[in-house]
Image (cartoon, rainbow, N blue to C red; front, side, top):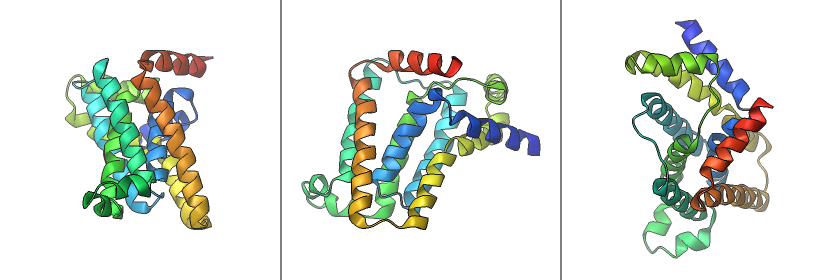
Length: 209
């Protein structure tokens, strides 16, 4: 049982340094930081990553073609709402609710779930065992896949922990949030432009080189 948890977790942590995890880690980080890197945002990201991992293992839902473009537009809009008070103020009533940490955590969760569907992982030994086992029944792979996804979001947890440890001034936090949002918008924009396959192929090639 321990090996079924530790093995996938450690493999996922190692994989976070590989380019092929870019489409999972970067949009998730962008969402969490745009939401202020609060612990509630981290909770939203982690829960959504777990669900997204199970969806990936189940292999029944796959975003492609027009759905990738639509999801990119949704992500861009959601990131702007998270980072921009002006955008939130432009939504009477709803804008004030979007200031609440748990409401923002819900948005972060939605963005993270989308990121798991953009992601095309480079399959290592542990993830390969999980995905192969899921073909015979997902239930037996829920725990190993959850461990893998927890490992995959370790960089996000580190960023949130650093935010609480350093406690940067608000204007610095806001500037960092805008930078991460801009990166997330660029990534989502590439998908809106129909570049998902090209991005995945490039990231995989960089990983294997």
